[in-house]
Amino acid sequence: MKLNFIVYGAGAIGTTLAAYLHQTGLDYALYARPKKALAIGQQAQSIIRDGQTVVDGVTLNVIDTLSQQTDATHIIITVKNYHLEQACKQIKKSLPNDITVVGLQNGVTNQTVLPRYFSKAIYGIAFYNVWQQQPGIWGHKDHGPLLLGRPNQGVDTEVQQLATTLAKALPCETSDQFQDEVHGKLISNLSNSVTTLIGNSHLQSDALKPLQKIFTALSYEGVKLLQAAGFRQAKHSTLPPWLLVRISSYLPDFILRPMFRKKIALIGSTSMAQDIIDKGSKDSELDSINGYLLELAEQTQVSTPMAKKIYQLCQQQFKQEPFTAMTAQQLWRQLQA
Image 1 (spheres, rainbow, N blue to C red):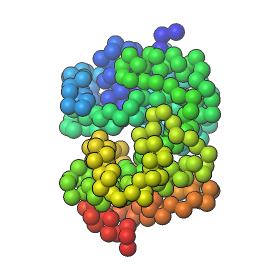
Image 2: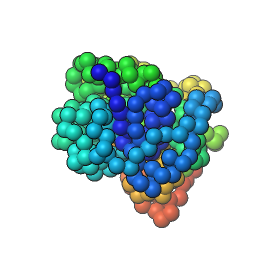
Image 3: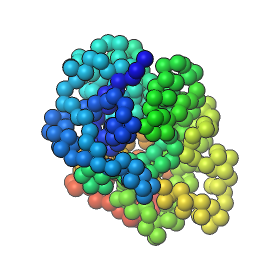
């Protein structure tokens, strides 16, 4: 069966995915609201991945209504969790009931929302960062593939066919350890709140030492939490080996600093930073990432003091009008208070 895609949501993930599909010649349409659809349709799109232009000035097939896309086999939903319910209602009203939905949200909220509306759902994890550098120009930092799967299930024929098709456009794989993968990614995503608090200044030289302390503590708490909850380290985890994470909390910082310097250099502008800093929005993924993990910590009775302090600080800072970033040193001092 030939696959025909709708990419729902014209943010960083959705627009760049559509550009990759376009370049490969796959059948797709990018759905956006009318004003944004008009702007994207009039602006050629390029992607710069790790310093190299990999998509050069393509004009995307953009739509602002769904009801005429009856030949679509899959709709890939790229909006964030706080807009997911609204998106599902619109899709359910506009498209055939047998369409397969693919959720590309951070975390596990989509595993609760999508089954309420659709009988066929596949879930994805984007192990890469994309962000808008300027209108029509997108940055892309590779950490890994687009990973597809279903919670607590093996990889079936439908998931494999979808991955094989998307792999023509960008690196795409499947996993039969999907819950382990998504929870490991959640621990990595805790850094999103930290880099947002400091206004994406994580690449500055004076940020290195305090951020190493913060990220080491978060990783240690996260690994301890996942092990208590019964999850295993998965193949695509961007975390170091869990044993190393546990050992590193007892080692002097300077021993692991070269490794940390390389790791932090891979972090671009995250989706949380784009919401809070670039858009000036009060909506973010704070609750679906940090909040979810703190709930899991409470359920498993695992102490996560660093994660809790950062969550509480984000709640305070993200409400500011306008948001004001702090330095990494200021953040570290507040966390020690």
